Length: 116
Length: 115
Image (cartoon, rainbow over all chains, first blue to last red; front, side, top):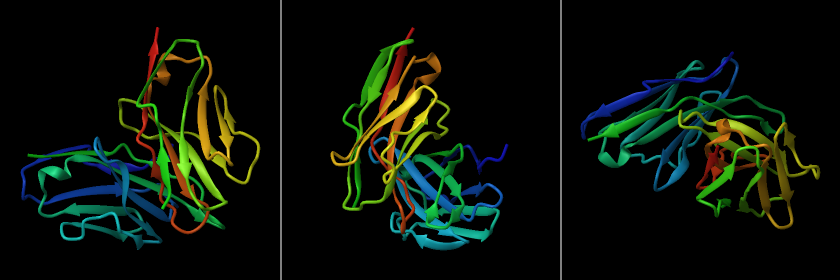
């Protein structure tokens, strides 16, 4: 049963600390998304990659957030320095792009981040 | 930019009854996808149903069906024979047919099932 995995599931950290979230997309999927869910903003896209290349990171605060795909099996989202307003659930999703576009996005279980 | 609106923050239904969740969207494109996702307390986002805008036939998945009205830009979800396990947040989402593949979500509707 293929699924997207995310680590850690929960993270509590103090303001100013670096936070790294990891995602393992489903094997064979070539598109990876990072979404953030908050009560105020709902679900919003932070960044996404196709074949490991960033295609859109316009939703990501560039001064403190960075997203990378070191290889096809790992995507990372880093926040440095973290702030209380970064507290949210961060979802990774993956999918396979083919033909006219991407067909399905499969979501991981999310990382709940709390910054105190 | 595309937007998705869910006007019902909360809904409730008696077990075994039918409930309809509303969703409207705004786009200038003619081809696109629409989705309903379910998010139970576990936080896992689960795809419930998908509709391609170029298909006139409404999508159906077991007890879940949609009423897709393209001209009105409306995409409602009907859940028949509601079960306790259907209790969750439900999100309507839009995705372009080509180009940017991100999902644009509505604010969600919290569905409660009363036994």
